[in-house]
Image (cartoon, rainbow over all chains, first blue to last red):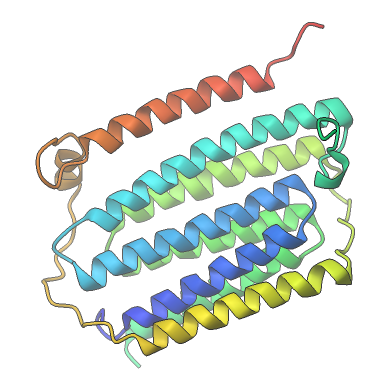
Length: 105
Length: 169
């Protein structure tokens, strides 16, 4: 309980956000919108870490540091993914996942 | 209802509504803007939990860096007025079913588990302590993950430059 807000509220919020991200990842075909769904999923995990840290173990800082590292990994992942996406766009002038079958067979 | 509860409900309503809009809107630039709203209200949640440094990182790196990067790549790869094709029903319903079942299972488990209440003090984390923990290699120190993240960032930077460079064929 954080001054009136129970831990389960945070967990329910991040669960909803995570599965909205999963839905977007399964439904979307554009590469950039799929990347945005992944950002949603990472963000919901960050909320989980921070809420557990603050409400159950307020004297430690593990959750906060893991959130910082997750944000750094997300930044690295987004930069490399966007470089790949722009490279693909240069090659086939399209970024739909279903049109990328050049290396498939 | 306390003010903390009110602010939490406000932020979570913004997060839920705009994250659903992010994955369902058919205009890609609007999806990026809605993602920005979600990230900013997550930073608001961190402020509510009194992690000021973390909220600042969230604002500058996520909302300032990643969303700008995404918007740039959208402008490079698609036309602004272009609408994404709607997903087919055969794709939409299984995905919605999977996410609904997963969310329902997780929420049932969360509601059944009895979490203990907060025990310790709620003092604020100061930046000095964060910096000292990041370079400390003893107990509760994070020198090793810090170095690993540094190597990862350099590798990502070099990789991005090499990938996006123009080739002379």
